[in-house]
Length: 186
Ligand SMILES: Nc1ncnc2c1ncn2[C@@H]1O[C@H](COP(=O)(O)OP(=O)(O)OP(=O)(O)O)[C@@H](O)[C@H]1O
Ligand SMILES: O=C(O)C1=C[C@@H](O)[C@@H](O)[C@H](O)C1
Ligand SMILES: [Mg+2]
Image: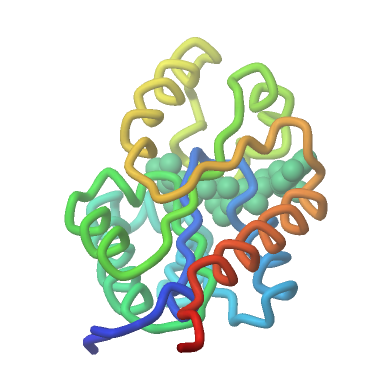
């Protein structure tokens, strides 16, 4: 599907950022506030394989997971008016970066390591890349990943916001930018 000619307010918004930053939680709320459909790529992959992500990694391997992740993002990123939360590792693939940057508004949800550490106990069970790693290793991964997320159209620091507050702020900021960029009547 080609989407040449989509205006900025029609483009889908892609939420990127480290696992656990809140892409799913905030993305879902943002979709409600903007009356858009919400797509969570991790959830779509789980539906396809009919099993949770750690099992997919265990049975099919990370490569198969990444291939399905790319296929789904290529499909959804070309559709208008969605809020799409992608997995924390999606931007490791250049093709995904390119297609999202070209077709969507890429929104980087950022968090400091200090704040992220507070969430680790609620994350580890369903994130295979956190399992069996020391806190130092995870911090290294966190810092490495900052580089891939630096490719974005807009960044929001979530540290001091509850999910609902973050979604409110983002919805207002997006609406304002759409108004500013709207074509003026002649
Ligand atoms: N702003 C926030 N403040 C506090 N807790 C939050 C916030 N946003 C999300 N959370 C909590 O952090 C956990 C992880 O959030 P979520 O699943 O949305 O992250 P994610 O970025 O989608 O992770 P992944 O990349 O692994 O899919 C959830 O338990 C969620 O309730
Ligand atoms: O950061 C990552 O590489 C991942 C993040 C999650 O969203 C899932 O996509 C999966 O656990 C891999
Ligand atoms: Mg998620």
